[in-house]
Image 1: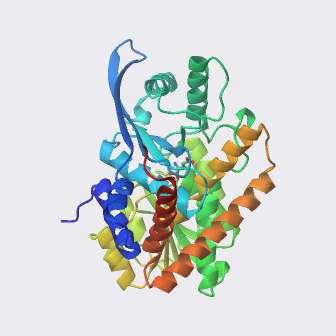
Image 2: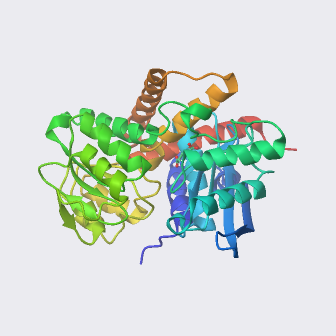
Image 3: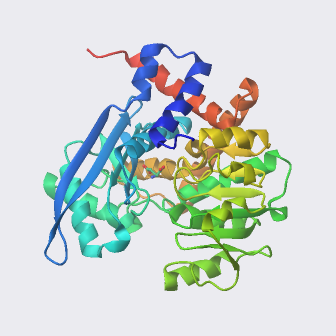
Length: 416
Ligand code: GLU
């Protein structure tokens, strides 16, 4: 049986690249493990007057190249090993696109679907208070992730600001545009996925108008990816969300799906496409571009053999396991790895933080132009190294990222 522990997987991926780089053993041990694992348990008053205890984590993996950076997720599946893996992927992600941040991740074990807005607010505020001493605008900067959004970021800003006695917007990114947020941040991860997909398409000598795409997950990443790919002329033939998966070989109207979701919250009941059950089978539809944009461990040794596409562009973090990678490689499917493909989000976060530091707000066009230029550069670097070293793009991306962090570590030396 394949080991699906994300921390184990992250370390396997790290080792493959570290072997290629010939990294010495102390550097390996240092870069492999997080700097700090913060675990908190805290009480929150529920709407019915009862009190519940919640568990939360903030893992700071590495800050050699700049402040710790990474999202905060709310989900019943959150656990320390998952957060540790996600934190290390953030270090490699910021390094591969070369933004001056390190890597971190946080999470609270809770099911937002079963909580009222007031309960979510109290959980967010108390969690922020619990981790107040380890986050900060120059220390560790959280951002949205699974089930968190601009409203959650605003509660964090407010709580942190109240505790500090002055308004501090730089402490998180992914804020609303009227409160220190950046134009283009909300769609940035999806835009990055689209840019990566279009690069792969162009390199293969294909035209987007001739291609189809399937999107697994229709949250912040999947929905913007679907819309932006459709704008490029790609036909979206499959979409899944938490409730179901839909398929229409003639194409799905993404705007219509968005309008339906606005009203109905979930895709279940959408009647302009066929429903696929179980919904995970959406990953096995025949298509050109497959975008897993949900959670970890979606393409594994159990289903990789049935995946039928040319390109996999990882919108989610960790959607493909190492065993699946091997199977996909044999099948000739090009996998554009998460730390490159979904780096648009953290890149726009960096731009948001820079705007906050400068007390400025850039126009949307400026953010988009800078973002696309940075991602294209990173894509070219990874692709070229993959060709030169005859490795897949995941290992190449890790090699670039680990190489950058190792070089910075070497130069800074060891304290004291
Ligand atoms: N949660 C996003 C990610 O996994 C964004 C992190 C950020 O902007 O700091 O990349």
